[in-house]
Image (tube, rainbow, N blue to C red; front, side):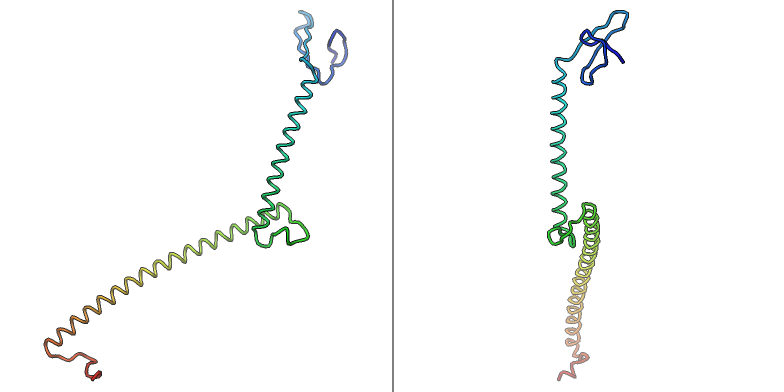
Length: 155
């Protein structure tokens, strides 16, 4: 497309922004203050984006290395070949699942231990009550001059 730019007719440069009105009213040409400003602005934005992206990749890499040090059989320092990020994440997921299952098992075992402790306490209280009842019955037998079973064996 041919446009009238700066009084010349020709192909539009890529960085030049042209605003125009209808041809009937005549061609109005306006350029930004400088195309160089626009170009520098784009380069600065691109550089900032690249810096942000590099920091993001560095953080991901650092967290991946830390994960590899925490996860069993995944330590990068101990192996000659470096594990892939996908491999590290896969082992991390497996390890988390294993920890979750172990945690559930421990919780179930703890609940069972609590129930057993409660049962033990109830049985201990029943034994105490039976001992007290037994002592009362022995006392009643002695009041009536009756011998208790097992007393003749003791003498």
